[in-house]
Image (cartoon, rainbow, N blue to C red; front, side, top):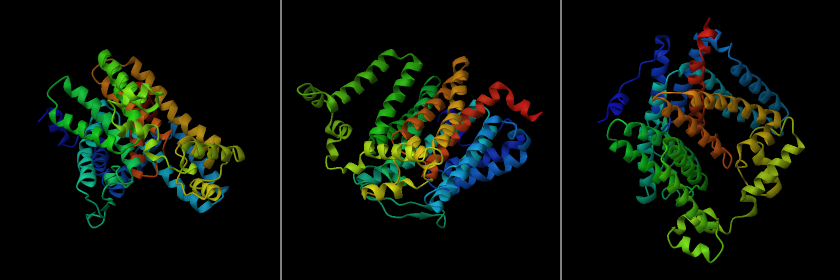
Amino acid sequence: MSKSLRAFLQLQRHPNLSLQRHWNIVQLGLLLLPFSAFLGGVMMLVPSVVIWQQEYKTLIRQPLNWGFLTLAIWLLITSCFALNRYNAFLGLFNFLPFFFVFTAFSNLIQTPCQLRRIAWILVITSLPVSLIGFAQLYLQWGGHPSLLWGLIEWTIEPSGNPPGRMASVFTYATVLASYSVIVFVLGLGLWIEEGRRNPKYFLSAIVLLDAVALILTNSRNAWAIAILSCLAFALYQGWRRMAAGVGAIAGIILGAAFAPPPFQDGFRAVVPEFFWARLNDQMFRDRPVAQLRSTQWNFAWSLTQERPITGWGLRNFTQLYEAKTQYWLGHPHNLFLMMSAETGLPAALMLYGLVGWVMVQGAIMFRNWQGDDRLIFFTFLVAFIACTLFSLFDVTLFDARINTMAWVLLASICGIVYRSQGVMDEWRM
């Protein structure tokens, strides 16, 4: 058993003893989060409330927090002008609690050791998630298991949802794909870091299982992001041959999917149809026009143009799209377009601007960072960028577990930036 794995079995100490209890609860919450949105969410929200009570004077001095407060107020205002106000106010729960958790966690998470701890928890808990997925696909295991008096409840469809695509405990394959991307990137970063010190057989097995699970979700979005993430780590490590290999593999797969005949025949001789037919949509040739992303995006943008300031209200896209196309669709498969259509361009730009500010500060800090902890910070940057890229082609924030993970990643980056700049101590004075 590696030293890192032994450390995982113990609750980690927090550098600020006044925050130790909250950090303990958060660690347990992260452990339960993939299996229960309720238990994991409560263990994220309760410490956030107490941290706000305890660190109120510090938190209100942070300009970024005022930005999120402004955004929250604006979302409340746009909900008042929504086509369906009930749906709009219900949709606020996908944003406001997570703004609150983010602002608290950016104060709670302060050290690279905490980043490493978060990564280990999420990666190790991905093992049972993947195993349940394999049982779902290959053993036809499913049903509605209930644990801990109903506090943990899953809906698992035998053979996957949609059929043939792994979904595991996340109900739908796309949501599992988003989760798998996050844990795969975190696992890859830990795998590289562990390889510098000792053998990593257990971690290697988990990363491999997560990669296979990611493939079996049959998500083109997840496949592309996983390849880009591998390329990013290869370039970071200076593994030029591996980077070239990853690029070559990607090129061969793309050639099998999109190269004109007769060139495609050579590529398809080595690339399984499972990949190229999914990429060029030949696997689903009879998809209705209303199901195409281009149709959804055009409609969402037309809604934005009609109401560019306030939008039509959160969770109102579905109603409008069904009225237009007679086809039910939960979202337009692009977070920015969903936000601009439902809450207006100011809200969409404000959200992306606030998140972008954190990432820019993180990138600046990463560029100037020296030392061994640089890799784990890079891993978190890549993991959150992966979440952002995923949101360009799908929207998974409706699953509270995925939404929480994304905000925890961003808060972790923000917390390290605050600590490195020394602004936390200034705000406490």
